[in-house]
Amino acid sequence: MKQCVLSREAGRVGLIVKPDKAKYMRFSAFPSRRSVKGATINGVTYEGVAEFIYFGTLISNDNSVEKEIQRRILAGNRTYFAAISLFKSRLLSRATKIILYKTLIRPVVSYGAEAWTLMQKEE
Image 1 (tube, helix red, strand yellow):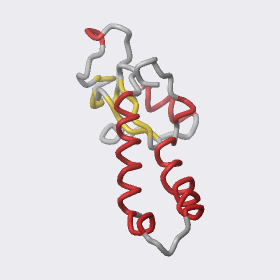
Image 2: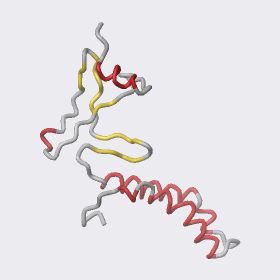
Image 3: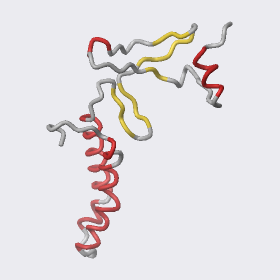
Image 4: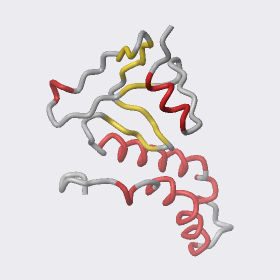
C-alpha cells in the first residue's frame, strides 16, 4: 500500500501521524464551507471536528473566542468553589485572600487571553 503523503512528510521532521488520534478541521470565512465531515487521504480517514482543545485552549472552525471565554470563566468558578473555604475563612486577612485570588483564580481565567482576537461584544 502506498504510504500516506501526510505521514511521509511528518516523518521527515520526526512526527508520527496516527489516524485514530489525529483530527481534521477546516477553517473558512463562509459557514457553508466549514465541513465537519472526515477527510480521506490515500485511504486513511481522519475525523472531522468543528472544535477541539489544543494546549488547553478551545479552537473552533468559526474562529470565535466566545466559547473559550465561557470555558475560562467556568474554570475560574470551579477554582473559586474549590477554594471557597479559604475565601470565607476569618483566619485569613483580606490581603492574603487577594494574593490567593491573584495566584489561583486569575491565571485560570486569563490563560491564553493575550492571543484572543476580541470583538467589541466579547470585550
